[in-house]
Image 1 (tube, rainbow, N blue to C red):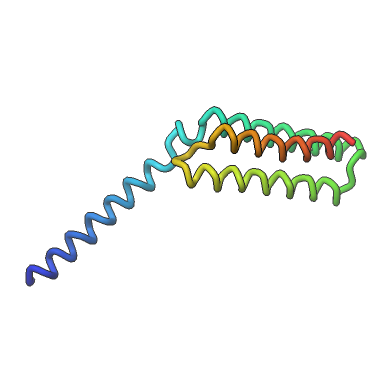
Image 2 (image 1 turned 90 degrees about the vertical axis):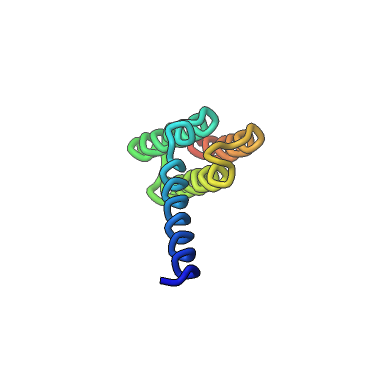
Length: 111
């Protein structure tokens, strides 16, 4: 093998090891359970329970429940996106924004 080929293979092997290490550290307990993320996600879970309860009691139609869950899914996806861009956590300002959005859905549930 020539020197260029060996260098290329070593560089690719190093890059794949680095990518594997980065992927393994992306899901650490700290990132998944960051207090601000945990609070946002706990509220989303609670709202889902409330939607289910209201649906069972007949206070929400199936379509209304579906729309509310879609809004919650959008908030959850937004939270995941924000966290993915910042090392697994969200800022206080982002948490406030997500909470405002959750408040809007919450008001719709209790109508």
